[in-house]
Image (cartoon, rainbow, N blue to C red; front, side, top):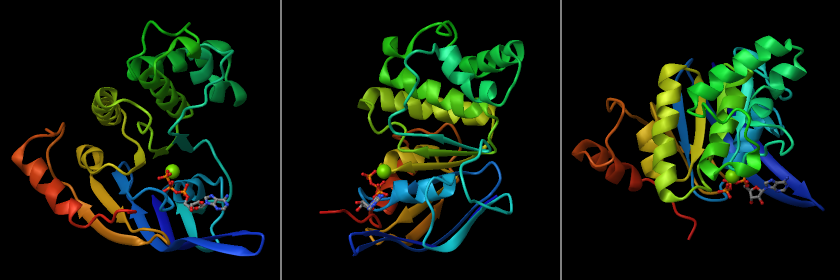
Length: 247
Ligand SMILES: Nc1ncnc2c1ncn2[C@@H]1O[C@H](COP(=O)(O)OP(=O)(O)OP(=O)(O)O)[C@@H](O)[C@H]1O
Ligand SMILES: [Mg+2]
């Protein structure tokens, strides 16, 4: 489904070269939930931007559904750490924005938006404006908006990084529920081992910058997972042995 082959990225500013990604190869299967776990500033966003088609690799190639990625496309939905919603549009307007741009008639657009607003648990907030929403609710809107374009791939770049711990747990459960109800191929970025273990079919562990794939862990625990089960804690300890820190 998603295939990165020998992807490298070097930024160049005023003749200064900064090698960020170094020979990254990875595959994500259809409807698989892959979590990319990496330390701060290692190049996670750079990698996601390349998969999204918002940035370009210096070497290597990225294909989605067998096609070379050469720009953004609705089939690849992105959810960011801080969701930028249109403040002048309601929840319904924000979620239905993509279909509107694609020319879908108003009635169908509203129905579609409503379906995904319900899916993310925001029923009743269709007419609310973003300013009235909490951080977790904004991320729900971001997820509904991505889903509403009917993407085959969802790229999520630390979507819960700005939320308080309690809301973060809740949103981890929610994203697992949403994905279980309406499966897509997901690449979810985090620097949090617990979050990775809660969500992933497979964890791909990145090294410090210049980043490469250090390790992979297939996670076979049944869902929904229990953060404090002995199996969960054992895996958490095992994986943390392999994680590099930036300090
Ligand atoms: N457009 C750019 N030009 C030059 N350097 C860049 C650019 N974008 C990112 N970098 C550099 O690439 C490195 C990795 O950045 P990136 O944002 O991809 O890491 P990250 O793992 O997402 O970080 P964080 O943990 O803060 O989210 C940083 O050193 C950053 O300075
Ligand atoms: Mg980042």
